[in-house]
Amino acid sequence: MAHNSRKGSKVVGWTAQGDSFVVYEPNTFERTLLPRYFRHANLASFVRQLNKYDFHKVRVSSSSSTAAAPAPTSITSTGWEYWHSQFIRHRPELLVHIRVGPSRVLELTGSVNH
Image (cartoon, rainbow, N blue to C red):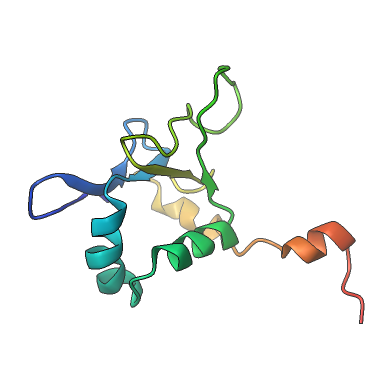
């Protein structure tokens, strides 16, 4: 998934562990890669889609965690990191398990009220 800019720096790519990805250059990603692969150039819309499919932004934490999420690095000088349990480098067979999550309203109410 690594994609380099014309300057040779990495725009987006996998983490070393291969269990999350990082958008290293959000401005370049929005301007060049989003229009090419997603038919729009709106980073906020891309992030909404990640959220819709239950991707999580990896956040900085002062305590170490043994949770399923990778070691946090988040929005640091290295970029924006996102994680999903079924989005793993060299495991394309897991992609079928990534589905649109339930809406927040349905999660909170448990049903749709008319």
